[in-house]
Each structure stands twice: as C-alpha cells, then as structure tokens.
View 1 (cartoon, rainbow, N blue to C red):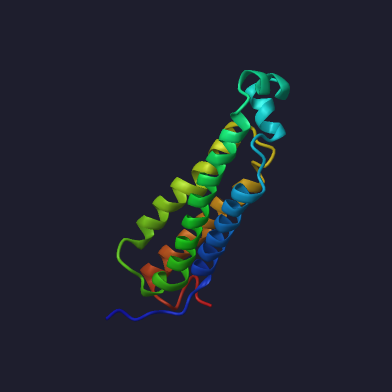
View 2 (view 1 turned 135 degrees about the horizontal axis):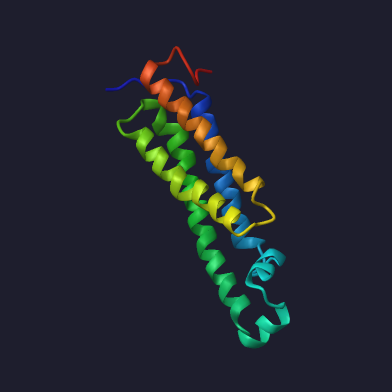
Length: 152
C-alpha cells in the first residue's frame, strides 16, 4: 500500500480551484442572466432585435446555462475530492490527468473569454494560472518526494 502524504500547497491550490469551479457552476445555475452586456456587444445586435428575431433565446440560454453550471459544479466537486483525498497517495498518471483536467476546464474557458474580449477575461485568467502553479508544485513533489516543493 502506498503511503499517503500530508496535503501540500499543490493539493490546497487544486482544491481551491475545485471550490472556485463549484462556485462558478452555482453562479451559472442561479445568478447568470441569459445574455450579459458583453454577449450582446459580441453578437453585434441590439437586445430588442434579438428578442424579436429569437423570442425564446433567453429562455433557451437559461436552460443551457443550468446544464453547463451543473457540469461545472460537478467537476468542481470531483476536483476538490481528488485534491483533498486522492492526490496525497501520488497515484500514477495523476500529473497527466491534472494537466488534461486543467486544460479542458479552466484554461479553455479562460482562452475563450480572451478570444471574446470578455469583461471578465483577466479575472478568469487567475484559476488556470493557479492550476499551473499547483501542477508544477505537484509534479516536483512527486518527483522529489515529501521534503521539497508543496510541503506544508
């Protein structure tokens, strides 16, 4: 049986990203309007025109964001659990899995928001940056053991 190390800074940062992901998902489920001002600006149309052309667009987007928020929150729950419980055992391939998870969730979302020139793009750059630092700390800790990076 592999020994389980105390969680280090890497695990805490990944856990924080998971909690952030839960919060973002809940925001999408309960708070986010169907169209933000930046959405309408990107589309290049007036909100009233959109309502005339697609009267059920807001209702449909609301449902899409509920589903998307559920996936975000669910992913956050899984990330938080993995960081708090599983990563301490240093499972094989964990660094690669963390790289893929961070790339497909936090980094992709941030990159798209930069492409859209979102008003929130700089704020949304924080979680993937935090994830990258955590990933590097985790990889170093896995490579060199408990005595180095990420030890609390």
